[in-house]
Each structure stands twice: as structure tokens, then as C-alpha cells.
Length: 113
Image (cartoon, rainbow, N blue to C red; front, side, top):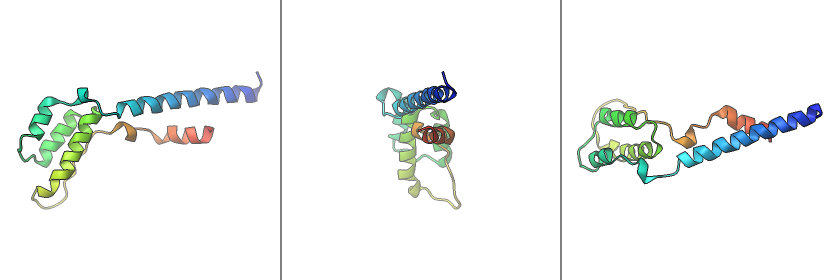
């Protein structure tokens, strides 16, 4: 095999791994009812006004669950206008799979192609 051929073969292998990674991340981001935590949903649907600290605790508990992270973020954003208080409070939610892609992989993919 020539040097150019070896490089092309290696680049092809890299693209295969990147494509597999993209596929897995897309699969993790698909809504799946199995990932919904019934206890947390009961709390969210109870009518109790949750504080920023409550949302942060729930976000920490479900940081690796893309579906619950999405639900919590949407509920938090929909209800935070109702909360009173001065200053800015930030709730850090877990990362959604589609946001977990690292830039080096995206850049590598663009450069190789």
C-alpha cells in the first residue's frame, strides 16, 4: 500500500467512527417514555411551586437522562417567570445528547471530508 492509500484508508476509518458516534448520539436524543421518571413527573404535575433549588436538585438527579433533562428544562422555563426575587438564578441542566458532540469531532469530520 502506498502512503496516500494508507492515509485514505485511515481517514475512511475515522469517518466511520465519527458517523457511528453521531448515530448513537441521535439515538440517545430520541424521546423514549421508558426514560420518564414517574416520581419526578408526579412532583412536576402536583401543582407545587418549585424553587430554583428544587429544579437544580431534580436536574442533578437526572443529569444523564436526556428525556428528563428536556422535560425539566421546558417546565423550568415555562414557570420561572412566576418566581419572585431579585437577581439572576441559573439552573444548570444536564447536557442533551445533541449538545454533547465535541467540536474536535465535528471539525475533524469537516476536514477529512
